[in-house]
Amino acid sequence: MELRLYDTLTREKRLFQPIDPKRVRMYVCGPTVYDFAHIGNVRPVIVFDVLFRLLRHLYGEGHVSYVRNITDVDDKINARAAERNIDIRKLTEETYANFKADVTALGCLPPTVEPRATDHIEEMKAIIERLIASGHAYVAEDNVLFSVPSMKNYGKLSNRPLDEMIAGARVDVAPYKRDATDFVLWKPSKPGEPAWDAPCGIAQKGRPGWHIECSAMSWKRLISDFSGRIRCEPADKDVFDIHGGGIDLVFPHHENEIAQSCCAFGASRMANVWMHNGFLQVEGEKMSKSLGNFFTIRELLADWPGEVLRFNMLRTHYRQPIDWTTKGLEESYSTLE
Image (cartoon, rainbow, N blue to C red; front, side, top):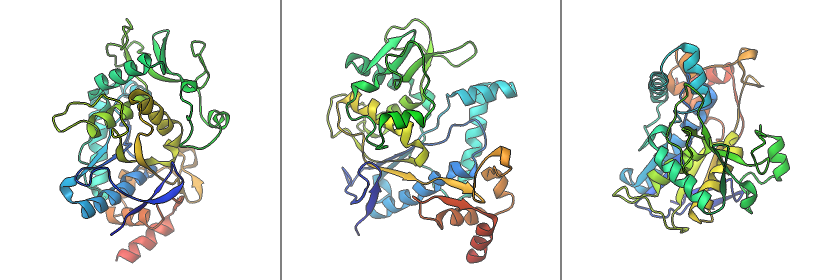
């Protein structure tokens, strides 16, 4: 059986040929654990669960490694913990447990590995130091920033001019940036925030930026050998097969992941195939708490069986926008009945 996958990077559907059929490797961006997952959060979980099952069928259950990360250090987490007046670790443990219960109710298999960002700080620091040594990053006022102009083909994944990408994203303009497009790899922590010893001899403790997390976790979990030793030599063989996530992550998150990983390891690519699921609307409108159409999975599970929610999600092609409606749920329920 031939498997053909649409690649966001090349804009074409191509025959999937794993680097090593005995170790097919897929990385998908997972949740930021600060609140219950909403229906938009779980679309990629369901989509890539289907792909995970298909890869296991084609190559064998023991020959597929599926990594889906947990972001447990983030501004939203800090704010929610302060709002609830609880310890950050207590919040992330509670939210992670809720997430696992909800996606299990939707019929999703657990990934092979679910690494936590906070368990990979040393890997993040190692990548940052490599980027500084190669001239792709710099230190400014206890921050470490990636120099976007240092990468000639930056923007290839989103395939838009740089000025358009900047206009469509909230770019933090700070006086210490060499270029307005540069993004944070490491930043100093404020009082009460999680903090670790900084890379590059920076005296003030700090914490990683968001984008560096996935470069570090995919490197550690998919490009290390079986003894756990991390490969460090620059080589295009140090890539993995599939990187997935929602279409909203193409820019800036996945674009920045590519920049960090390729420039740190001297590779021309990070993953062989990039896959993204489409946006989700509710009753024809963007999901928003202010519109009253914001639904968590936990809320929906109180009214609908998990298999109905899963089937309703899969009735729309994964790359197409989906309109989540009560009518659609009723149709999905009737079909399964």
